[in-house]
Image (cartoon, rainbow, N blue to C red; front, top):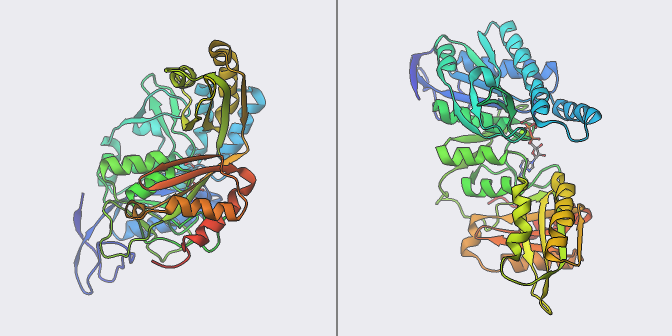
Length: 438
Ligand code: ADP
Ligand code: ASP
Ligand code: MG
């Protein structure tokens, strides 16, 4: 959506915007933005006031803005810990009732801060907007979004502030979208409302070649392809929640990650086409994930259907399985290993020990949750051989043992002992020359 309004002379737009004000021009196209601010960016009342000042500036330039905010940093963790003090496995419905409150505090505080700046603003919880989700508490999926209230407020000149991370199920109960879910609220709103751009404001100034907190030499990328971002997010780069990237791909939302602490800079734009002018790096980034656990079922009969017999009951318990390895059989027996989210480790181990081991007559079930997955990602891999072998050589030179391997067209992932994860990321970052500008 693009609206044309008359602005005062001299109002300057941010440098990265594609809606520049020509010197002396009287009229300018203004834009409709979704701006999402994460937990650190709203981590104190001072920071909320900063966000309000930034939003007010955009508003004064004539843009229409819907702001999505996360809970203040640490708040969601605090609420989850409270629940665990009362119930070992908190009731999912009630957990959602509680953890959604963090975002509710943020929307109210931000609206107050905006009003202090004389900006008209109105807050909405997810259920007030009516962000309709399925009923999978703590990992709900958005089904639809009602736009009427938001549109009416925008048309009346308000900034609309929506609580991230939450929605409402068909039965009226509050749902949440999984950790980091405010990103998905932002992108889903951008898709539903047909915004010009969804801007994810966070505590780093864009997407880097890897987490700059682990590798200080990591380099900010001006652009990253949607496919690469999807891989990075699915392989553990928590800078964007995976579902938000999936939404952006499905609805072709223009998505940009940028700093809430710096005024200048264009951040990183997620592009849908590879930039033909740019010399394509073979590897764009390195992702890592500490959240996995590995389970091995030893000495299972090597016969058709065994994978289904093992993984069927795991899937029935709504547990996602990531990497899978079945070894070559010996004497009619084989070993079968797979990884799951660390939170699902104990449940999966119990399913295997109680339901599967006796059933398939396996020798043993063993597992460990001190593993990590390290992945190199890049669309350039399609046209370059030898990336996997280079990765294995670099790790071998550091004496890092590889426990599992998975590859796709644009990524190579390995599972290593958690204590070598950061070392692995650093040496790979160097070996693939990611510090050098493209
Ligand atoms: P927010 O609270 O704003 O949602 P997150 O903590 O979810 O912020 O995401 C931002 C963090 O993501 C950064 O502080 C950084 O440590 C981490 N991160 C991981 N991988 C990357 C990457 N490739 N580029 C930038 N940041 C990354
Ligand atoms: N507050 C939620 C979390 O900590 C959602 C988010 O920040 O995106 O996971
Ligand atoms: Mg986040």
